Image 1 (cartoon, rainbow, N blue to C red):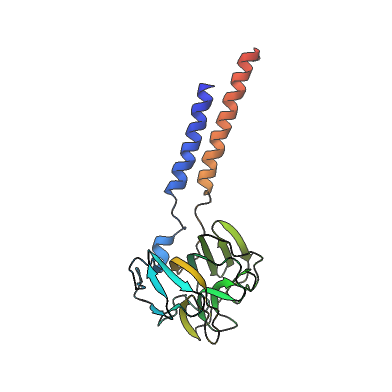
Image 2 (image 1 turned 90 degrees about the vertical axis):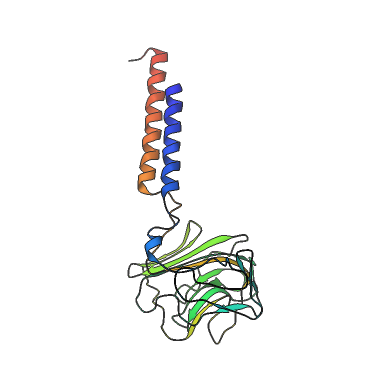
Length: 244
């Protein structure tokens, strides 16, 4: 049994090491084109690119978060941060807010109605992601969560933390016309203010997926470890019973 326990410990340790070595998102370092961590009070600085935001309507930044009141506060950019046309892109937002708002709300938006980009909610709290996925069947949760939307020629995916909410072959191509990117409000002519806190926004020029789900190599290590444990236990039982 001592051998079995050691093997089990090795398997768990291998899984932990493999998971710890994995980045938060696959390929994220090379593909990150805009990053906002709200680390500077009273400002919205792009830590990777050069597109800084303007606080409007009472929006504030403090305690490493953007604070939005749901009635007038938002951040306006001079540029469209999300790649447009048939480009590949991903947007990852970490936010918390009202779980069941009584109106439309947008955490981040860009473009114009019809082929616009946004991550937000419908009245009642159901999440929606871009004009291509107006209903996802997933209710906006309480607490702080990661919201990741990725799209490219292979289709579109929307994740809440590690949960795959939308998996579609449709590419969500975003219009290059309309409003520049906003945090906390929909593109014109709509308002749809978001009430809550945003602690980070990342924009990529690639399709990203959560890496917290064990990669195939990690699963292989885990399966191999459990197989070794099972074999050791069977040998132990055979010796006890006097079976060859």
